Amino acid sequence: MKFDFLNSTQLLQTASDEKLYKKLIIQLNKDLKLANLEEEYNSTISPEKLKRDLHELIFLLINDRFADYLNFLYIIDVSENEVKLLDGSDVVKLSENVTFLVLKREWQKVWFKNKYS
Image 1 (cartoon, one colour):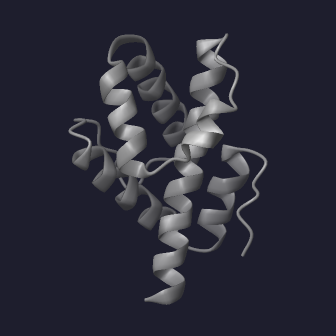
Image 2: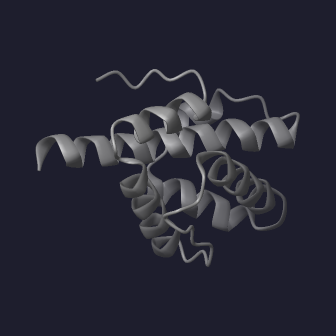
């Protein structure tokens, strides 16, 4: 399985196609809790709404709670090198790209757990 998705929509569609979307949400909720963030997503949330809400959360964290943002990325284990490559001049675009990196890392965790357990 390759993890070279072009965007969040493609990633979430793959998760749905492989019947792992609910597990992706469970993993995301688990990591949000570990990062002491109160956000929690219902397992019935649509992929579009999940992407929108997570983007909004990350935008808020970058602007208002930067230490929580860094802790969240650390808990999820988002690649520091990938984050450093992002253009930070537009916070909306940055938060959209970070949303994709978060979903991609969570997908990797779910996919590997499913494949090897």
